[in-house]
Length: 129
Length: 335
Image (cartoon, rainbow over all chains, first blue to last red; front, side):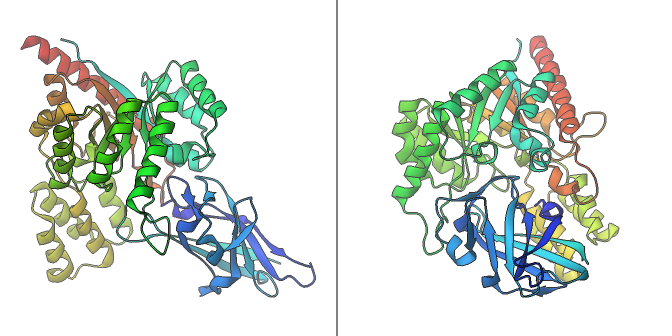
């Protein structure tokens, strides 16, 4: 749901020292028609050119500080609000690779009334010089 | 006899524009008022960023905003996160506490109808009845496809309401259960995803003939060696029931609000899929009173190829509802 709107590709930028970036971040939305508690977001998988980065490299910041996916599992009092961009932080030596690349985000959500997980995915082209 | 059925809109209808930041909640309410749909259904978990910690001041702000546009709040759509935790399901006590939390916010907002998700267990709702009675909020279990009016799961709720003699537990029909024809928007989406036109036509024909879903799924998946888009399209038939409109009258005492679900409206304001004409004439004949609350759910079927215009879709459906209510009212006068 809302798949093609998940990644805001204009916001991809490196984190850490400019000459030695330790990762990158971007703004993303939750592909759902309502907000959801962070404990029900089972996976946020970030891939570059089809290659998934490790789960532990990904963190989400809903505006109240970044959490790893493991930490989100018990973040019962925090929500990713409907239609609201959150920051996804990815640890990766060198940051986002230079040149033109495909970034993909997959979301796996535990929706109580569905018998199966809800899956969303978006893929955008990013060019970084 | 003039029908006392009123026209309203669920904010669910504008999810595309709100998600993209193109409409605020107040824009949606102002638009609804401008087309004469003065009953507003809300989804607090979508429309209230501070949920579940909504302050009294925010509640007052909502009431003032709705009143400013000459509208009223009609229904509160609750959710229940039974799978909040990864390690276990919510206990019964936790589920009841969550529902009570929603009943309380619903009452604070001055809303007397709460839409309960269909998967919520009837025995859990039974234990919430005393609080709903105290707050004077009707808990209406959403009759949502693939369930239908006479599905045994929903008859459990009816049975409990009868046994308790309560006016605060019942049903809340979603018009998606009256799918007379397969929605063209669904078909078009599957064709864009790779379904071949002849296979898509076969699936539409099977639905038109009301052939039970599993026959068609087997035909498409196995005998026709359907591709993934074709199999997915065939599988939608499991969720596309045509509940008998003639039976809705039997359940009128149990519902006070209707979600007027739709997937698309034609430019001449007709619904190509759902049997509004048949259902509305039953509602009018039975003297039902309540809101028909527009619930547009077409955005997800077209957003891959076109800009969604939820306002135009809702406007067309409201035209149709007005027309059908007027017609049905006139027919009733001649009886």
